[in-house]
Image (cartoon, rainbow, N blue to C red; front, side):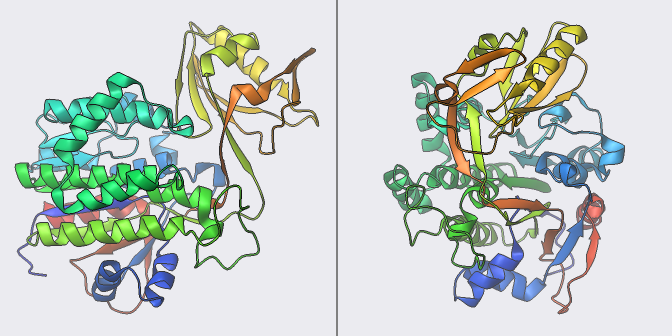
Length: 433
């Protein structure tokens, strides 16, 4: 790569496992990733040591701000909307560079005049994009919130279709059609469809605005690995997903890695004058046991049913939801009530993080929930939990704090070094500013 290249595209491939990539490459697959990593090598990033802090919405704040968790203290998805930490986009804008971002996890749009900024579906911050893409974003937010039931209202469906028609690039029409046709039988392809759409939107907006620096965050691999890693042809462990969950011979992990391989190749061809960096934030290893993931069907209705008073509730990723209250006293009462919810063997149903006048709640019950399931809250018993929840997945992947980084501005020296994830902003600044 020429040393005069000062524009940079940063592909954030959340939780991708480069070891798995190498295994697929050994099978003769993923040609673009094989060529990129073969030419430029890769490095490992390290971050937090406490497992509870190995969440992507914590790690990507570190990657964007250069601050470890002990300094940024952003623990919940969406919390960056209320934080004032300086992120890499603002630092580059202050240096006179034009910047853009598509779906950066837990990032705040605090820019004065971005080329574009489309937030992730969970963080409430300003959207800077043409009107059709703002409407598309709103539809994506609703689709992601209701992902467990594949539910989308008519209004959002119209905006999703019209926005997708504008964002989708003809070169990928066949992939969209294939994903849509197979999604009922292979539900993980809904996540691949969304990632393909975000990637096409990224290419269109970069081509239109010519930013000096832009990021694209893709989450489909993280979602799919959590749910289907045991079905990967490169998984060597003893666990297998049951036939009722996924048909034998399917490899969802390869499906999404193949998408990322295609995205990388298309970005390289579309923008040959840009430097390209890849990062994963962290990665996933196989989960050691069978664990069920459940999501509340109607969060507000369930809270009312068990006697929890609240002001507002908002779904977050998978099992999580954010509950807001009128005051801290009401939040403490709700925390006690939710903490008292127990399964038939005394297992906790929920885990709460109290932030004064709000609770970040996770439905942590990890076993099967049958039709006759009975749970208790204090001295009260409740039945019908099966009707209150939606089965999300069997957990297959678990977080590992080691992430990966590759840079087209570096040569492959044959060794894999490690550096702190918090160093990423400085690497970007050195490349662009």
